Image (cartoon, rainbow, N blue to C red; front, side):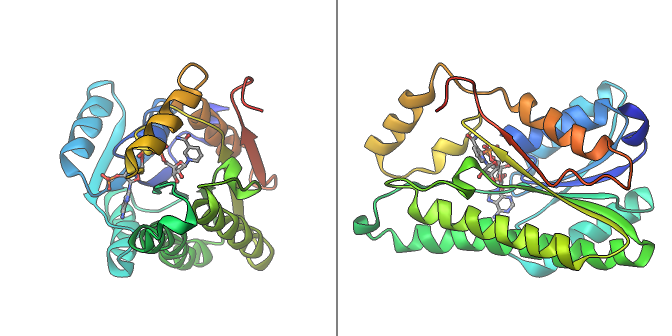
Length: 246
Ligand code: NDP
C-alpha cells in the first residue's frame, strides 16, 4: 500500500481539524508530502509541527475555499513547495442542520458556498495541473447524506448530493490517468456539530451518535486505500459508517 502513496503530493482542504487533520496525519505517515489548508492557521501550524516532529513532510497555507483565487493559490503553493500536485482532497465542509421553516438563510448560503462551491474551486484549481501531466486524483469528501435526506438535513444533504453529482460528472469527463474518488463518511468524531447554531439540535446531534462515532482515522484509511491503488484502478466510491449506524 505504501508504495503508491510514498512521495505523492497531497493537498487537503479543511485540514485544521477532524477528518482533514486525520487524513494529513495518516497520509504523511505513509510517506506522502501533505499540504494543509484551512482558515485557522494556528491549528494548521501545530499539526504541521507535529507531523514534522514525527519525520513527515508537511506545509500549510491559509485557505478559505469560498475564495476562488485562494484555492488556485493553494494548489500552486503545493507545486511550489513540492514540485507537483498528485492528489486534491476536497474535504472542507460544514453542517449547520436546521428545519427549513427556521429560515436560516445565511446558513444555507454558507453551506452552498463551502460545501459545493468550495469543491468546484478545488477542481478548478487542480484540474489544469493534473491535465498538464495527464495524471492526478480528486478525493471528494461527501457524507452518507449524499444519498439520504432527513428532517433538518435538507440543505446539507442537498450540498452533498451536489458534490456526488459533480464527482460523477467529473469522473466521466476527465481523460487519461486522472481519477475521481468519492468518500462518504457516516457519523465521525470531529468538530462538525459545532456548526449547528440551534442549541437543541446541536445537543441532539451530539447525543445521538455519542457512543458510536467513527474515529476520523477510519476515514483517513479509506482515503489512503483509494490513493494507494495502481493508476489504472479508480476507486469511485467508499461509504464508511459505524456498524451501529443504521
Ligand atoms: P470539522 O468541523 O472538524 O472540520 C471541518 C474543516 O473544514 C475544518 O478544518 C475547517 O477549518 C474547514 N473549513 C470550514 N470552512 C472552511 C472554509 N471556508 N475554507 C476552508 N476550510 C474551511 O468537521 P469534519 O472533519 O467532520 O468535516 C470534514 C468533512 O467531512 C466535511 O465536508 C463534512 O461534511 C464531512 N463529513 C463529516 C461527517 C462527520 O460525522 N464528522 C459525516 C459525513 C461527512 P477552519 O475552520 O480552520 O477553516
